[in-house]
Length: 415
Image (cartoon, rainbow, N blue to C red):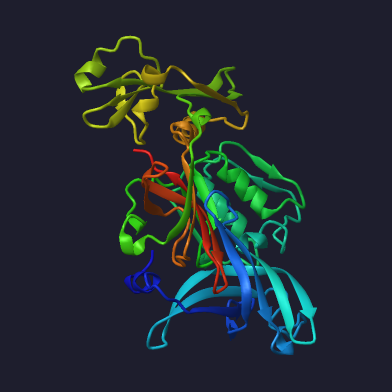
């Protein structure tokens, strides 16, 4: 979240940008701080990928201590922590952390006037996907009995020399591994963790701003606070806007088919956003409901699904796209990796939440808001093209130059 001090300086009409780099060794100890070396670059953040951050940076080579070699600041096992800063009137600098990165490669150039180096950066996922190590030297088996996804992920990451227990934060993932998983030699730890994550399609795995590996259930962002309200005059830093809706995205009938169990029965679940009624009394006189049918009560905006009786749904659906309103629009998945009913139910929930809307996306260019992150709630309004309401940031490109603009992509939050 952006602090009040950061809010205040971001709203200034004039800015003086600073870029600071902290170079870290393999023990995460700061071995050098570079301020005034940066020429240009950018940081790209994606909220829809396990690879959250990557970027590039061009800087002056002011001394040979930056030339890649074993005695240099730029070498194997080195990390870079990047900050952008805005200068106050009294010349103090308000800093914004932009992430912790591994150096992928370096491109050096020399001319009569100066020497420069450009480096490509990626977050710490590169430490476990084979890019900087993190491959399995032998076949690894995970036995399902009594093991949760949390335990399996933690044990997978703990075996790495670059990753300590303190760097792993796992919360609210008590789902069980449904079957034995075998990974072949030279597979990466990332592939193993990604396989575990996709068992339920309800688990997020990424490296956060502070360089921690985060494993958590995907959150409902509707109740999140608004991080930046672009509808307020002094906070509207947008330069250009564009909007896109996708009518073909809407699906209200989700069929999930998994593998056959030992009795020959196929694991399956169906969610249908089917009925819209004004009151619970009107819901209770429905007679042709089937398991997984959903009914939304307009007076309370609460949804229920049928499973021998009406049960309260713990996520929201849009009654405007119900079968009652627009007819049935079907989406089906066949996946033999789904071997538990709970997997099928969570996958159906995941797919319905993705497809129960017009997938409205907004892309805009703005004056850089350095503290903004992905998966944060913002408020937008542009009457010219029908943009209005709350949106969730999905991708951000942050410039590391004085004259750069920031590109943001956001998706609408539907209630």
